[in-house]
Length: 106
Image 1 (cartoon, one colour):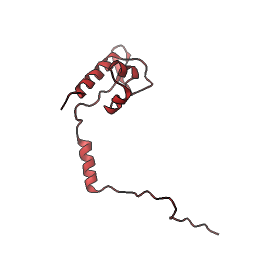
Image 2: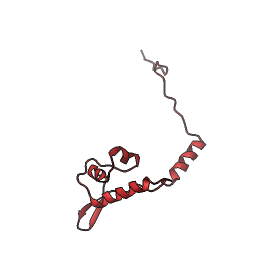
Image 3: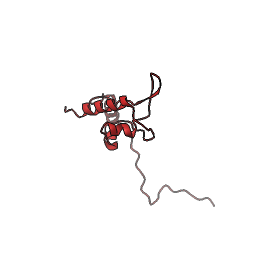
Image 4: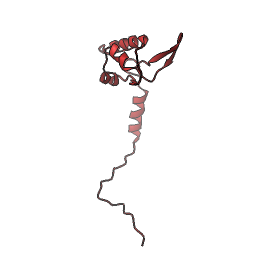
């Protein structure tokens, strides 16, 4: 005896929608648009004498020293790395300048 698989079930199926030409056009217009004000700064960390490397995100203490909380940092598009410990001075001043420039009116 062979069991038949039925396509009809009691669960509603998710309707798969495809994008139309205007949807793709709108997507690419948004993707090509420059940032409204400034790009979010990238964090760095010191690795030796006169040498820095890019970090995954700003540490929580850097955000705190710059006067930001986690929710505001995420809404501004800033990368946050909760695993990093300590604050690097240039990152804090960069964050302060970025927040100051993003709060200016249009």
